[in-house]
Length: 321
Image (cartoon, rainbow, N blue to C red; front, side, top):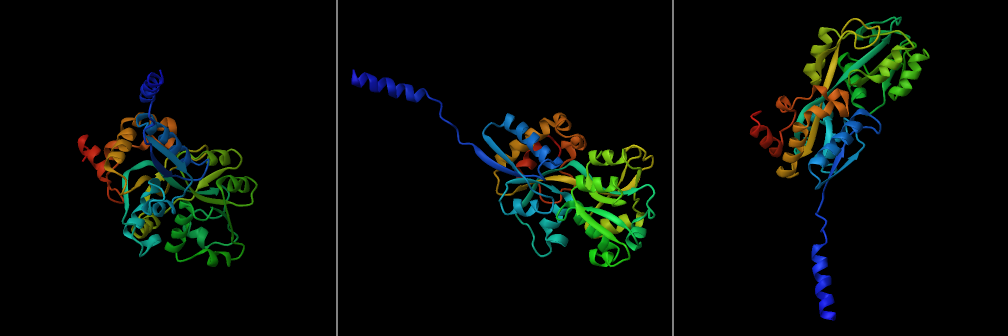
């Protein structure tokens, strides 16, 4: 009887499901509650549905910090912006002398972020040049370390100035904060200008326009050429009527969201991630409106760092490469 019990127990144990080894993949995104964080969380769920063997962990990050996190393998994948990804891989500008050789990409243009240089409609200066040379300017810049704040630093540099120089001007006031904080200050008249990066349309800009008439600072062709040549910032325009009361398009700069990956991640893993993203492309806008611009068939074009071999395999199978 004891022997029979042992056989029965052994047989039963062989029928118990054995947990398969889950591959943990950390995804560095953006600020909690921000667009990048929401996008990562939604896409992670989509990828896990197709690949239950993956354990995707979304963590906060930022546009200037993520390339280094991915390059060092602290996070296996992460959001980046094409400009910063290129500079990190080549070791130039912001990452001068520190090439990120382990940085690869899966694709780009998942969404575009536009620099919004907002001005009160009754603000005295209307161009970039006038504002940076002006007096009694009250301006809010998105918090330090963000992609928008870095873009503003480059705008200042391209115009031969910096924060210290501006603050010495008569009545020149610069505030840093979140979009929520800057929105409140704009509505209360504490500041007349706001600068930061947002997808279209930016909910906070819609909110601002409902309490104070606003317009956009229009970048001149000369400004756009300089920013593109020196820093790789892409010229674009915010279409007319994107925001209530703004009936003219506004020339500005943009960056494209890139999905970075450490080159040590296996080809099979990256292939599966790429396949899930591309074959569920129609669902992406339901995760975040800004991802309606994503097109898998062209997502590898003009990549700011090498395409990972796993992603390349998928693109070749589909005839995109």
